[in-house]
Length: 376
Ligand code: SF4
Image (cartoon, rainbow, N blue to C red; front, side, top):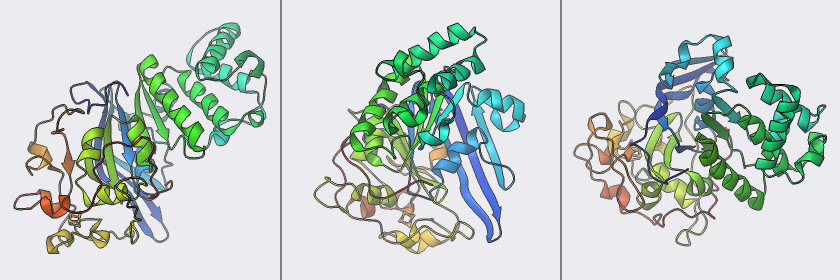
């Protein structure tokens, strides 16, 4: 994160258009991601946010086809630096994955091999991408360990993963991801398994590294406290659909989708009220017509349960997003690239029906932690 702005004046690095990821199961076809579009610009941090089952992890893993196909099926356009990843062979994709695009997952233990030393694994990660001598790779590995904040990196080089704490393991995993000098780091709930103090340290580290390594970050989280800490731009997902997209300041200052407002209502310390979201996500094998959030929405009207999910309307004037301009938002003013999938923001709708309720507009609260979610 470099500017905390919505970043729409930068060059797109990743563009995902109309992504559908389905899984064929004995119970039917699970539509985990159902027509999702978003982009990540160079130097930008975009957060995909939602409850467990929203499709955020599946969407992020579809980008580099970490999803096994079959049983998964992935459709849509995934353009990275103008290259359509969906058309790449497995070999080509392997080069991108762990090269220009690196992943960091929630559980660092699972990403490290318990039978090799941390140093050995880092050297391997460096040599996978750089044709350098073992000595040069060792030097680079030590630099990376030092940079991610492992104290006395030289002494810890020969230690095994089990000799590191959870936070230190995640630092090692981040160092391994950086070994390829990625242009995009996809971090899926990288701090969820850590205690709050360590979580803050790791988030700070990611912010520093992004600038230093000139990376973009796509961060997947259920935690709006994390979003407030790191995001430039936010995509709110629910039941495989995009519900709202906005610059981080605009999202917290003017949350517009009833689901986003409900998520914010789950945060402690916002106006003294803390709610949980009643109800459950719809059956992903048989999603209802209309808005996916209708069953849980306090503002649902008849039009909400007809047809398809409402398009993403520009929050500023209710135009369909397809015809709206994209411009830069900031902490100082409204972000016109703020879109919401809700009938009350469409033609003839009245946004005040939604915006008049409750309380959730205090601005990013870096200490806040959502109780809405888990991992998907
Ligand atoms: S479209 Fe209807 S159900 Fe969906 S969020 Fe808006 S008011 Fe609620």
